[in-house]
Amino acid sequence: MKAAERRAYADLTQALIERSGGVCERCRVKRGESVHHRKLRSRGGQHTEDNCVWTCGSGTTGCHGWMHANPAEATRTGWMVASWDDPATIRPIPLSLSLIHI
Image (cartoon, rainbow, N blue to C red; front, side, top):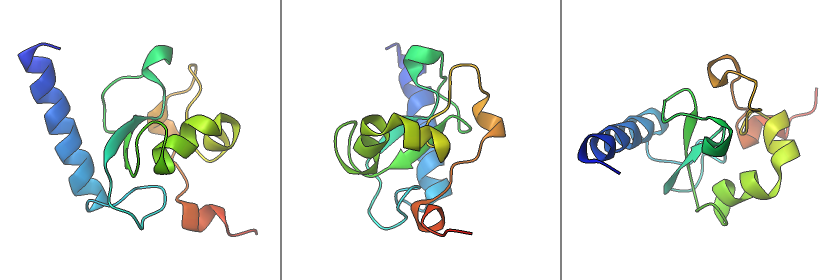
């Protein structure tokens, strides 16, 4: 990663921390630790605030790990986005709200 890319990623991370107040955007309980790309980078996902969320855990632990271990449910609740979808048009549902059945 080039210096400019590292700086842009650091700026993105800071913006996500500010947006989330430093806590995981899914569970809203634990301290956030990592950036999750809702449209996966392997699917063309970009390093943007619309595409990224601040999560607890890593790609294998916490909410970040849950998203990767449960892609169908993560997609249904907006924490993952299909390659053909625009992350800006799909808002993720926080865990506290996804447990409410209407």
